[in-house]
Length: 283
Image 1 (cartoon, helix red, strand yellow):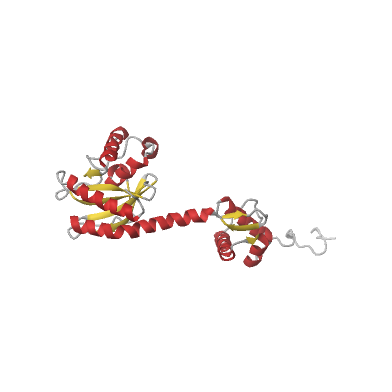
Image 2 (cartoon, rainbow, N blue to C red):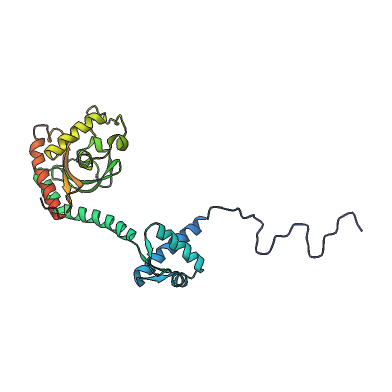
């Protein structure tokens, strides 16, 4: 015997890990690496593509197509089912695409149709008034501009397409709020943020203004979002008569003066009416 303790045969000074384990301890519930997350997303999309191609498929078929274990395919399908993107048929084990796909496609198609159909009436309006024309939608507590046409006399430092703006300080936003009939305190908060000295600062005053918008059918802002910028907007309705967008004309306050706003509004209302008819609204 020596002073060092003898190890059992086949053992070294370092503790051996069970077969299949590395030196790092695997922690329960550990977050997956980015590569694994990307792989899961890729597999989930492939499941949707399989169902789109076949119409109906079982977990076993999906697993074989993906080249994964059946339990992995089952987990993927379960997540998609919870999201409404796939649904199970009466005979258990068979799946098809769910109506969640229709909802997503409908949202995309609706905005594309709106932007496409708005082009002609907005081009005519921009040429007539020689100012910038926009089409906007309400997205939560913001207004998103989805289409723009600039008139020959328009002074535009930047494009508004894709930009989000506060609804209480813009003509499009006031139109969309007026007909959405949302709880403004909950949606916008109170007091309202002010961008210029002309911005409406409280919900009570805004509610009074929105009531006027509903009565006359259009909204106007005078230097409420930017100093020197005025605008007029009117509602766009779909085939169910719901207000889905707003058409607006904006320009410098020295051209779009307070006296000219009602006349401009008549043209904007007419253009919004034409776009509404293109979307299936029967006045």
